[in-house]
Length: 167
Image (cartoon, rainbow, N blue to C red; front, top):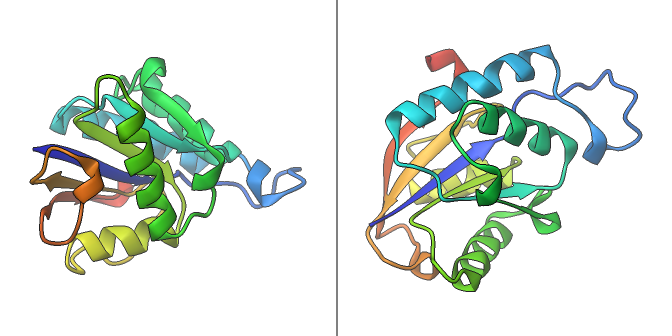
């Protein structure tokens, strides 16, 4: 049994001095929500042994907050340019490629990325149970398989869907 957690970055600032969308930082709400969500996920378990993160500033800052909350370790983190604004197929490609590249394959992968790709993937894997995925939302799935290469709607079940407002 595997676990896959899809986590949308926390709220970012549109009023920053960032030159590009890729460089936008978290705003005050994002800085508040990310560690709260990290604590909530940590309490629900299982331990995250691999965290795949977009290279955007807002995802990296969210990742730092999740590390500070004790949800993930620095050793578990791997950044991927391909996760920046990735579509669902690209998200799954990165998950599967990363999985097979590991000497000790992970059992719980957390993907920290962006909408609309995350929302579409979560909605698809859950059989349209998750719906809108606001900032700092997390959808966790139990995968009835021993390889992330075979993740699909038939072997994925939604364990829970959390948002900062639901805490």
